[in-house]
Length: 125
Image (cartoon, rainbow, N blue to C red; front, side, top):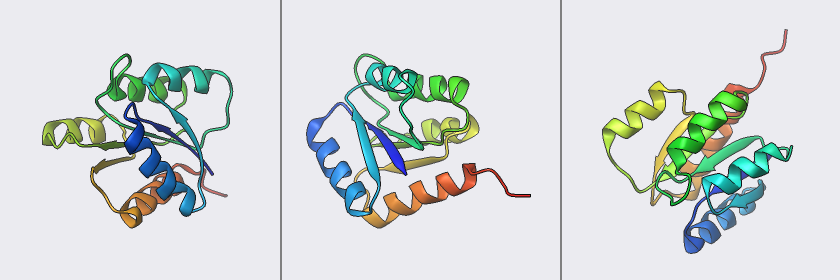
């Protein structure tokens, strides 16, 4: 399973990528929403987008809306330090598959991602 992690702060990217690879996820990374949009448009096989909310250039919310419109089968999970409850509620209302606050532990991160992917998988007949 390939996770696209979108985060503009390198130290956070390194920590999260390390957590994900230790859980045997394959990871791609982008340093902005714009980079993530370009990567998705290239046809890269992505099973889930994990994104920060606040970023320069194209922010996580704009990326989320883009993914939901153009790639509705790809689950989207926010990983952010932004604790505003109204943002979390809006994300869930608009179809986010998860919303994690940093710092979070590896187990919560991995379980949230696995659950999001399971929920998005087609149901066998």
